[in-house]
Length: 395
Image (cartoon, rainbow, N blue to C red; front, side, top):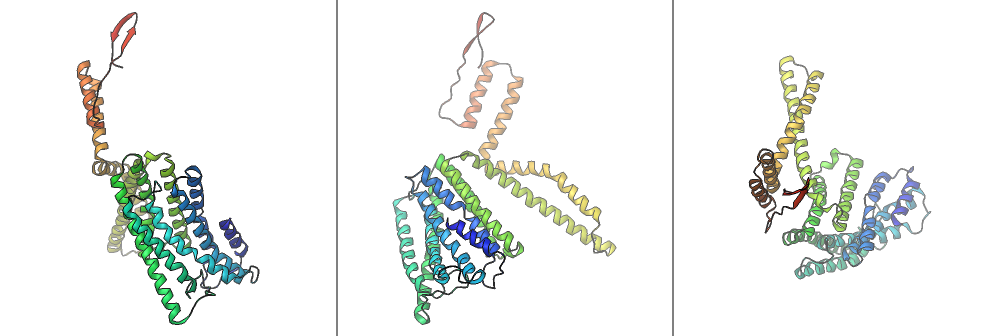
């Protein structure tokens, strides 16, 4: 309901230009829509797994996002689009913006409690207590900080002078502690992965896939490469990354198509490497050809025929490169699968050519032992009745 109210205010104020300092209506809408999956995910987990604390943490996280997401649209509509239409815009903006501290404090718990709703071990409870103390310190100080609020809205309770500045600095340190706790909480997933097996290990792989996507977004932001995409595309990319987080966590918790993660990771490695290789070949070929043409003919424009030829070369290289990269990825990262496939291919050739039943039985047992590596293997042949007489045949 809070997110729906935020979107309603954004739609009503869309035609009114916002002054410098405010986020554009478009970016506010993308921010709200990008996090709409959080309450859906939390509601699903809490309703299906009420004894798992993890769903309730997601619901608290979603509530914090909804409060913060409403702060700027509320103030922008009440102060710029329709002045005086809503009650106490500065006060409401400030109170809603306090949810930012709770939001940051909940991120470590999203990492620490995945997927069981329990800490990896009792040792991690010290980190949980540090986060709780940090957020308990930050929230009261944020109340008196002159820098609080969403958008260019000053806090009505802000204390100026040295006292206000000290409160702001201490709250900043508390927030930095929470960020450091987030990094340590991410390390807890590595510890949990090494101790896990079976289903829990597959769940952690799904979560790691989403973490890599969001980590890539953070790296791009730190390198200021987001300016190449533009504000709108960048906000859409952030929203898509967080949507991927909700989907992967949902898959992991509800174990829907849980074991497809290995195929997804394999395809991501193959096609990511293939795309990067083809892009390098294309741009490298075009750049080299352009330099050659400029040297020979003194023309700045690249002939259209060269561009078409480069495109055809890329199309011709697609399948051969894909097969080679797939083979390389299998050998490097999926060695057991690669060896099993080679073994089965060799056995199928032998099965086609060999007629000795006893030898085939021994080969079959050998193939199963080599590929599956079970503790014990036995082969049972059931007798069949054929045309009125009994005979033994492999089944």
